[in-house]
Amino acid sequence: MSESFCYRSLPARATIESAGALLDKVILVVGACGAHGRSVALAAARAGAIVVLAGRRVPALETLYDELKALGPEPAIYPINLEGAHPEDFHALGSSLKENLNGLDGLVFAAGRLHGLSSLDHTDPEEWLRTWHVQVNAPFLLLRGCRQAMTVNSTSVMYLDDPDRVQRALWGAYGVAQGAAQALVRVAGDESGSRELKVAGLVCAPTAGPLMQRAYPARAMSEFTAAEVFAPACVWLLAGNAVSGQVYDARPWAAN
Image 1: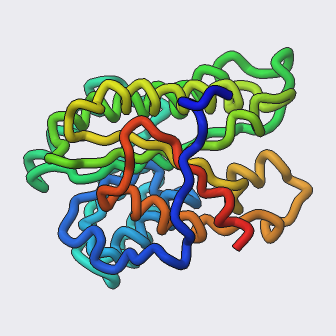
Image 2: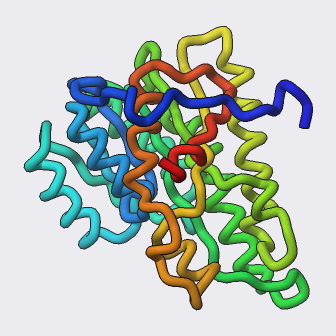
């Protein structure tokens, strides 16, 4: 791997203080029903953010809404199904954020899709397209659609899996898409380098949740790292500490 593609290190987890780091900031969390989305939404609320919860499972969003309301400013819900969303749906999301919340200070893409491990020969083409749409097309369209709402010094953070780990046999569309998603962070971040909008990635260790359950159905979720471990890193990046176009490595935190 060339020097320009090296992962960037994070400070030690014990040294990151998140209290008040996002006070009154509007933070959109896409994939809020997933393990990473839920954990970062809670962490952002504790840090003082107005959190907008985006996802397709409305009952789960409503439950999380109630939890966040008890922690900080009143959150908001924006139902969206990434699998079938079109460019105009993301533009409508950006317009709604601008009109109703006066802009967007941070965007977290924590959505993922992994139907299960399967060889390419046995992968349903429709499943391949759905996975690719969620993992690559959706974050691209989000960056475009929400650009109109982004405030000065706003930050977008994409949760990523390590391509070296998943670009192997049986990981199919998910493995291929992770490489593309990381490239999207680098390209979008490089293009925004002369502007105030930052785009960064966050690589985490395999995390307990539905995605890893589908990948390793015979393993106990206790063998994987809890998503809450990595949420402070995302809050730290959203608070203005990210370098645009860089991918940060949170995997060492899993060992602490």
